[in-house]
Structure formats: C-alpha cells, structure tokens
Image 1 (cartoon, helix red, strand yellow):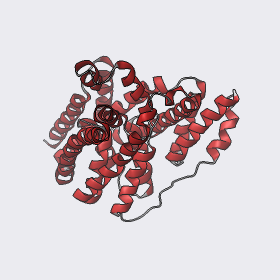
Image 2 (tube, helix red, strand yellow):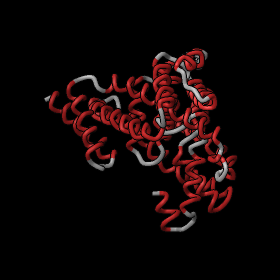
Image 3 (cartoon, one colour):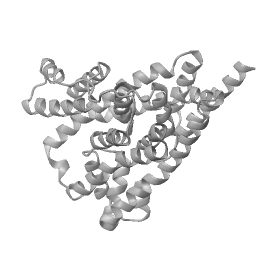
Image 4 (cartoon, one colour):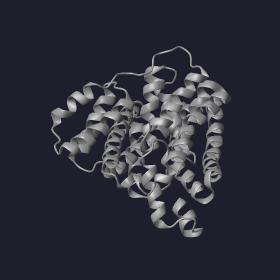
Length: 348
C-alpha cells in the first residue's frame, strides 16, 4: 500500500530509493511499517515530515485500540465477551503461526541461521532473557561466518552466558516501570511486531506478573484485528494496567525509540546494507527473533487451543489463511461469531 501511494501514485520516491529505505529499516529495532512511514516522511519534508508521518501513522490505530480496550474492560468478562474472545484466540494463534512460516523463508538462509533459530526457541522456553537471546544470536552468526565454520559445540558456551529473567517481580506497576517495559521493547525489538509477544510475555506475564496469558493473547488479538501497527497492542495493555494514563505512557514508550532511530540513520540508508558485518548481524537477529516467535506461539497456543471446538476453529482459520487471500480481520470476526454462537447454544 505504501509503495502504491508514494512511488506509483505520487512519485515521491523511485523504486530503488524505496528499496533502500526498506533495507535500512530492517537494520534498526522497532516496528518496520511505522519506521518506513517515518522514512518516507523525511524524504518528502525533512524532520517535520518525519514527525508528521510517524504521528499520522500511529495515532488513528492507537485511538481505535484504546476504544477496544475500554470495551474490553467494561464488557470483556461478561459471558458474551468471553465467548467472543474464546473464538478469536485460536484464529490469532494461526495468524501468528502463518507469519512465523512466511518470515522463516526470509530469515533462515542456511543451516547456521536455522540452528540459531532452534537454539533461540529452546532458550526462550527455558526462561532465558529475550534481549540476550537476540544479542547472542547476532554475535554468533557474525563470529561463525567470519571464522568460516559453524560447529554446534561453539554455540553452547554462547547460549550458556545468557541471563535468566531480567525483570524482578512486583505487586504493583508504576507508570515509570510501565514506560520502561515498553521503551525497552521499542528500543530492542527487531523484525516482525509479533516478536513483541515474547518481550511482553517475559516482562509482564513471567516477570512482573501483572498480566495473564489470556489477557496477553486478547491484547494481541485486538492489535491484529485493528488497522495499523501491531505495536498498538501497547495501548491496549497500558489501558488494562493503568487506565487512560497507562495507555498514553505505554504508547509513547514503545514508539519513541523509532523516531530516534529513524532520525539517526535515515542518511545512511544507501550505505549500511553494503557492509558484510551488518548483514551477518541482521541475519543473526532475524533468526533469533524467529525463534522467539516460535516459542511464544507455542505457549499461547497451549492456552488458546484447549478443546475440540477451539481446535476446529484453529484448523479452519489455517485452511482459509493458506488457501485464500481473505483479510485476517474477517477471520477474527468469524472466530468471534463462532465463539458467541457456541456460547448461546450451550446456555440454551
């Protein structure tokens, strides 16, 4: 859509420059679609364009998610609300699974990156810190490619140095802590927005214990169902944990690093992809991010697919995803309807 708007229809950029910006966007943390919009804004109108494009891309989606968050808090625990979410969750798991497979085709370039991805999945499921997993994966690919060898045993001491659980448990969540959690996610998250699941699961579910597995999956469902970047999941979770103020704090926290990164790197877009070491680091990060996605998808799937009907919903969603080009919003809406109908049948 962005290519059609800014290259084909308006001619703001040519194809080569557009591809250069995509390349450099993949080398910095944060939501790729949002950062791409910022790059285009900078190309069109400098720093003011960067700020305007970024805010325009984020704000409508955040407001829509905020409305859903309010409705979730008001009605999500009613029988009808629970029934809707019951049907939505298996669909979301399948959507994330499809994204995992598609991204894997690009991220897994050879058996080294495949090995890194598998190791990252195992490390995440064992409770290792997700930031360290990404860092170790990047360094491992760079070091092993530079050495010209990829022995499996060389990976073991690297993964052994990864720390477990970086966030301490607390009974309450201050606005400063909430801001810090989402600032960290925005500053260190590479690749697809779905990797956000791993970060939030580690910090808010396993670490601070202020969010449940079900609430996280519901938040991702809303982020996927609504238009705009998946990172607006932060708006939803912020509202759950801190009301209107929490929603604003979480949203600013997760998107703020993107403005800084794009402003810092936009002039290097033509040169950064030419260096072999940055390419190797990016391959390692992408493979590790894929492993994180696989780990959290497995965990959420265990929560979402719990009985025969949810299994059938998930299988049906998978068939539609792979056999048709139906918009995922329609699949999620269909899952919600099935969940509601099942609730009405069981209660009658």
